[in-house]
Image (cartoon, rainbow, N blue to C red; front, side, top):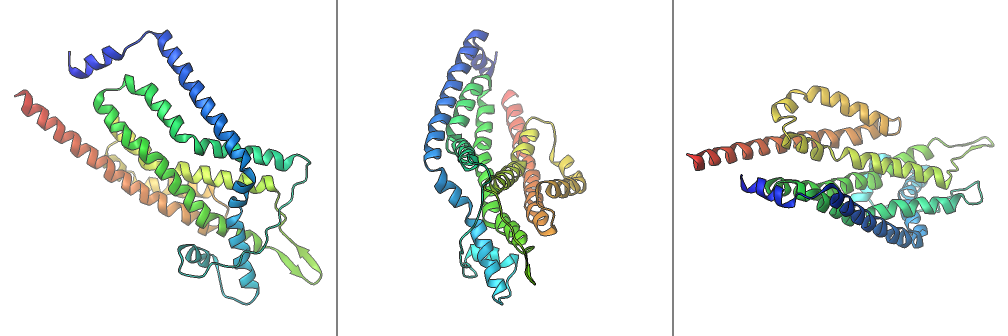
Length: 291
C-alpha cells in the first residue's frame, strides 16, 4: 500500500462521523453568516450608498455632456484610472413605491454582504471537510484554486463597479427626453437598481471563474490543452453568446465582458499546458525512481 493510500485509510471514518462533522461545519457556517448579516445590516445604508457611486459618476458625466462637453462612455473609464478628472457627482434620486421596500432592500444588501464578508470562513470549512478524502498531492493542487477563485471573482466585480455600471447608467440616462414641455426621465426604484447591481456582479464574478473551472477540468483529465486550443473558435462564439445574455443590450457592454473572458480562456490553455508538463515531468521522475 502506498503512502497516499495509507493516508486515506487513516482518515476514513464511518458515515455517522462524517454526518456529525458536516453538521458541525454547517453550524459554524451559519453562525458566521448570521454574524456577518448583522454587521452588514447595521451598515446596509452605507453599503447601498457605496453601490450608488457608479450611478453618480454616470450622472456627472451626463451633466458635463449636457453643458457642452464632448464626453462619452470611454471618458468614464479614463476618469476611473485617473487620466481624466472625475466628473462632478450630482445627487442621485431613487424611489421606492412600497412601505417596506427599502427595508427589504437593506435585508438583501446585508445578505449579499454577509456572503462576501464570511467567504473565507465558508471556504475554509468546505476545504476542511473535503480535504481528508483527498491525497496529499491533490490537496496541494487544490489550494491554488481555492485562492485564485475569490481573486478572480473580485476582478470581475471590480470591472462591473468601475466600468460596466457607470456605462450602463450613463447609457440609460442618455435616453431621457427633456424637450418642448415633454419630460421622459429615469426614476429608478431602489430594488430595481440593487437587482441590476447584484445580477451584474454575480454574472461577471462567475464568468471570471473560467480559468479555475478549465484548470480543474484539466487537472482531472477531462480536457487537455490541445483540445482547448482546437475548441478556440467555438469558445469565441460561446463567449459572445454569454456576454450578450448577461449584459445590457448594447455592443460596448458585450465587448467589455467578452474581451476579458476570451483573455481568461487563453490563460486557461496555458495553465492546463503547464499542468500537463508538470505531470509529465513527475511521471518521468517516478519512472526513474522505480528503475
